[in-house]
Image 1 (cartoon, rainbow, N blue to C red):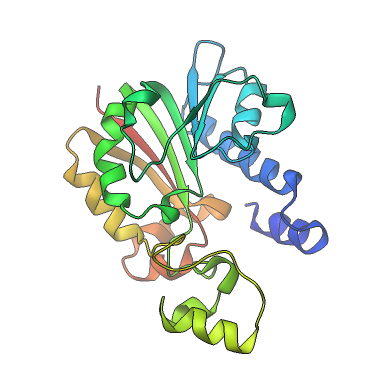
Image 2: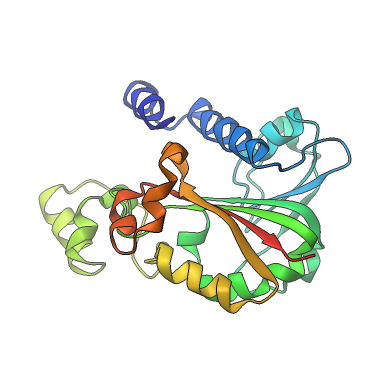
Length: 234
């Protein structure tokens, strides 16, 4: 369980690089516990990589890492890393190739068409390959991101009330940079895609309490951030 450490660190230091390194290290440890291989023979795609923190931790585990995002924001020490610019809502996924392992962290809720993303996943994964998908579902306590918990008033009313009461600048706007997503609906989309299967679905920051994600409706509120391990059928 890492949520208490993340909260303590965020209160003291904000969401600095170390904050995201802690998340990535915990996610990698969980994937390894699920039998996901990480070595020099494994080529990984950090999809929606941002500064490349997650990919950097995977490199420390010995993986060869490719990076992709809408634009390159990689930190200077990764300036020469393999990078592909892609808009996941608009562009063809063929430019990304196929990988044995893909990590997509905190991107899913920012896609205008997440269902289409799920449909295209088999083209990105080698047979038997895995996707680590992690995102903040809408009804999570942090579902509205920088205007949480006002998102519980709805994607239209919530931000308006936040702006009137708090008045703090925000970067997330519903249906522009943030889209409501749900655990149950995402599981349904994966089931519709015959080439994919869900090996695990857990609360990312307290994965020991995996039973929470098995309870419809309640899981949408009890899961701060969802983590799924999705495999393309061999």
